[in-house]
Amino acid sequence: MKKGLQALGRLKTGAMNKTEQAYAATLELRRHAGEVAWFKFEGIKLRLADNTFYSPDFAVMLADGQLEMHEVKGYWLDDARAKIKIAADLYPMRFIAIQAKPKKDGGGWALEEF
Image 1 (cartoon, rainbow, N blue to C red):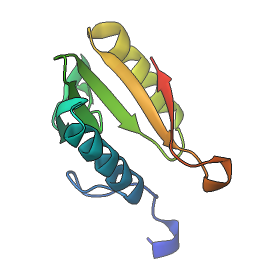
Image 2: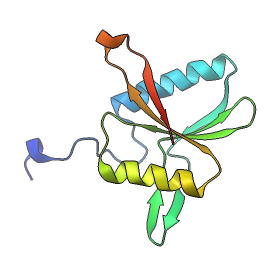
Image 3: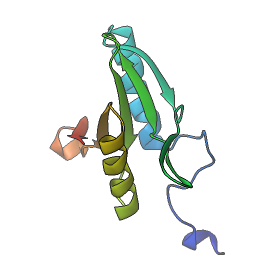
Image 4: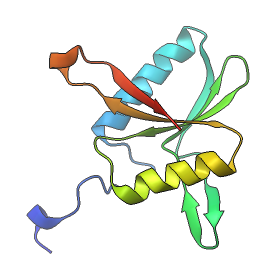
């Protein structure tokens, strides 16, 4: 396969893309501020069905002990949106999609809760 035709966003397990690295830095700032107690990149694997799993980008424990699953996306593919919706229906945690806002729109992060 030619390099130009390889799928974008497919890195080795455990390797963060640039958007995930930037979001990890945001989580680290929130940890230092006392809002986040703990977070782990690709630290949890959830079973959705037989032979079907979903690994959120970040498992995040807030200071109050609440557990959240954060999915960082540059753009959405249909299967990824379906998996996070199914996971949100099956598991008693908050599932939040994170997208970087363009600098022209003020930067920061856009959140979508499932």
